[in-house]
Figure 1 (cartoon, helix red, strand yellow):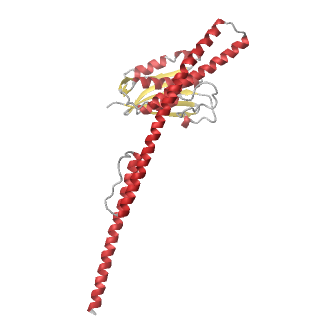
Figure 2: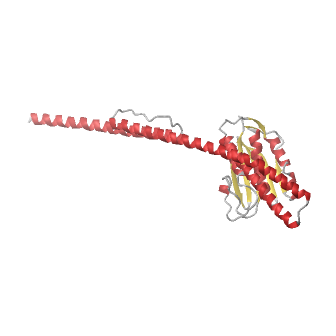
Amino acid sequence: MNNKLTLLLIALGLLLIVATVLIVRLFQYKRQIKEFTKRINERLSADMNQPVTVEYFDKDILVLADSLNEYTGMIKGKTLSIDKDRRMLKNVIAGISHDFRTPLTAAMGYMQMIDKNDVLDNKNKEYLHISMEKTAYMKELSDSFFEVSQIEANTEPVVFEKVHLTNILSEQIMGQYDWINERSINVDIRIPEQDIVVDSNIHFVERILENIFSNARKYTLSYLYVELSVSENNVLITVKNDMQHVDNFDVLRVFEAFYRDPARHSEGTGLGLYVVKCLSEKLSHRVSATCVDDIFGIVLTMVLPE
């Protein structure tokens, strides 16, 4: 009887040891799986060079880790290849766009000379003016392609400097005088007298504002609102204008390349606000758009220096 009890106790003890070992291994596997998941997420989101490591030298775990490292290494190689091809394509597009600009500019010059010489009859003048409009559009499209390609292909870090927004915005508004006066636009300008300074790049900021006002020129019907303001730690440049009601206008897509007002068939390339978005991102600024009751607005947000 004692022998049977002893054997039973031994068996129970062995089962308890086996169960404990299995439970410990189970927790080890679960912990290793969580670690795998963490490492994979790190590699996919940020550091593709960070290897998947193991804490428990089980054969199957080691094989899985090697396979994951090999797979993510392959993804890294393909990603680098795609990025290289993308940069090459952008450089090619920039080169082609640059080559287009010279003959298009020459063609425009010759057509303007013909127009000024007044040697054509009315019908041929009409044809000439149509040709001039189409050539001018091709020139604008080529210039936009070149600018976008240059921005996207340029991986050099942005040079930041102190940018005096009050002066720059005032100068940009003065540059809009001709079309505002010609079309009798009702203008509401709110720029504070004090100098507002941010850390940015003056050339990029000027280009952003040029494109925002160019968009306003194309779409404004009768009202233009411009404001420079400070809210907490941010500086905001707000430009609003009324526009023709368009049923299919999608304000969420205005910063996409080649998106244009469905009601507009001739003017603009659809790249102006895309350039605004690209340059804003390079400067770590934020740009957003709204459309309420046919009032379209763009807000450029910059952080005040500490």
